[in-house]
Image 1 (tube, rainbow, N blue to C red):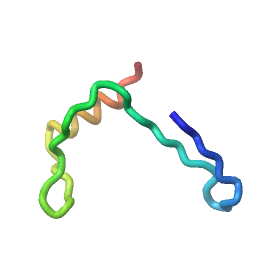
Image 2 (image 1 turned 60 degrees about the vertical axis):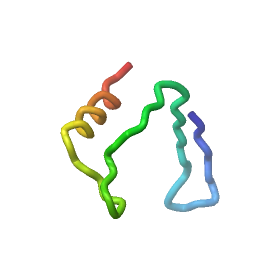
Image 3 (image 1 turned 180 degrees about the vertical axis):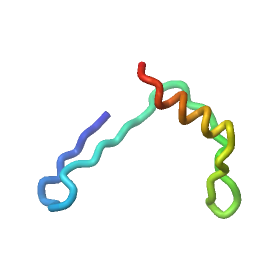
Image 4 (image 1 turned 180 degrees about the horizontal axis):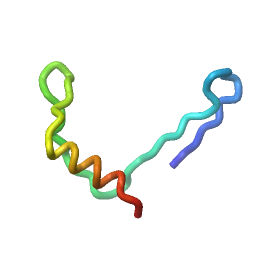
Amino acid sequence: MANLLESHKLTENSVTMLRRTSGVRRLYYGASGGTVKYSAALREAAEEQARPF
C-alpha cells in the first residue's frame, strides 16, 4: 500500500494505491463496450473482498 500526499491540491489531499501481490486470477466481469456485467459472480467476489482479514 502506498499513500501519496498531495498538499498542493485544495479539494484532494492524498491518493492511496493498493497492489495485490498474490492470488491473481483472471476476472470475467466485463461486457462488450466496456460495460460491467452485474452478475452473482461479481457480487460474490465483492463480498469476499469486503470481508475483514
